[in-house]
Amino acid sequence: MPNSLNPLELIARRWQPSARFVRRAALATVVMAVVIVVTGGTVRLTESGLGCDTWPKCTSGSLTPTSDMGIHGAIEFGNRMLTYVLCAFIGLLIIAARARTPVRRSLTRLGWAQFWLVMSNAVIGGIIVLTGLNPYIVSSHFLLSTALLTVAMAVWQRSREGDGEPRGLVARPVRQLTGLLVGSTLALILIGTVVTGSGPHAGDAREVHRIPLDWQEITQLHVDFVYIVLGLTVALWFTLRAVKAPAAQRRTVLDLLAVLLLQGLIGYVQYFTHLPEVIVGIHMFGSCLVWIAVLRVLFAQRERPALAAPAVSPTGDDEAVQPETSPAPEPEPAASSR
Image 1 (cartoon, rainbow, N blue to C red):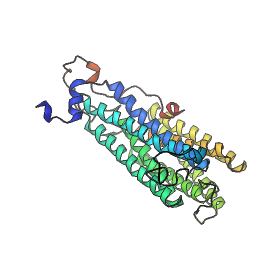
Image 2 (spheres, helix red, strand yellow; image 1 turned 30 degrees about the vertical axis):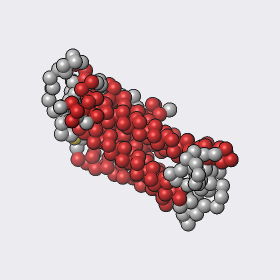
Image 3 (spheres, rainbow, N blue to C red; image 1 turned 45 degrees about the vertical axis):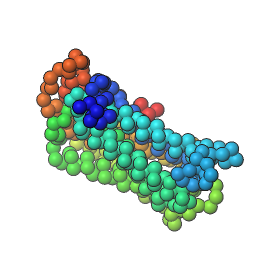
Image 4 (tube, rainbow, N blue to C red; image 1 turned 180 degrees about the horizontal axis):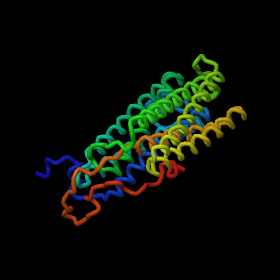
């Protein structure tokens, strides 16, 4: 009976989104995952980390910032409100994936994974405020945002594939080299959070506890890993060229190399100009682009075919029910984020 249907089933009976709509909804979650990282960095770089001095309210007596809190309260509260915008995009993705025929269970599961990651990070954000910007918790906040971006990229990739078993497109040694590249990039990002936790931008004008390490020495370690990732990227490109891998796979590696070189240049500029806030913010945005580029390299090395050709939808919308096999290249999320 219709009354026994859950809301998602009711929507599915009345709306059949196209495959393109689902892909765009998935891409929107990637963009928003980057936006939430950049705005979170803005909170720290403008010393607005304690602009709202409690959580979940902004003050003990007000849900929103008061006029005497100034710009810092507005910036911190604005970042909190972006969480709801991100959840709205994720909700749209889940609804669209559920309403589409045939149902893409893989997409809805990944969409719910995004939602719970956002909720977990919101709680961690509250703990950060309640602990006075504890640097270790701040680092975990950024790492969880990276996990969110990873799942969002996986959803976007899956929205352009079928639901068949994944098939590797490269030999095992190439996959191992790629795995080493992915792991080294993760280490690079992790060390970057330690630089942030020990560096001069504490997130508030008042004295804030920092990670008790020499941030310049940690920065040097960070730079060392940049060279490791660069070397692995170049090695992977030559390997793919030697085995005559498809041009699309080699192109993702070249894209990663370009992003790494640009990010490295920004890193040197921020270091020798004594970490100006704007350049540091651009560097945080660049870290998202680096991780997106690495994931694109990884995803390009396998494919998922469609399970089977489903019947035409009763609505007559052929696009809504055709399997997605080897779709044309989509715009890069990096370009969409700018």
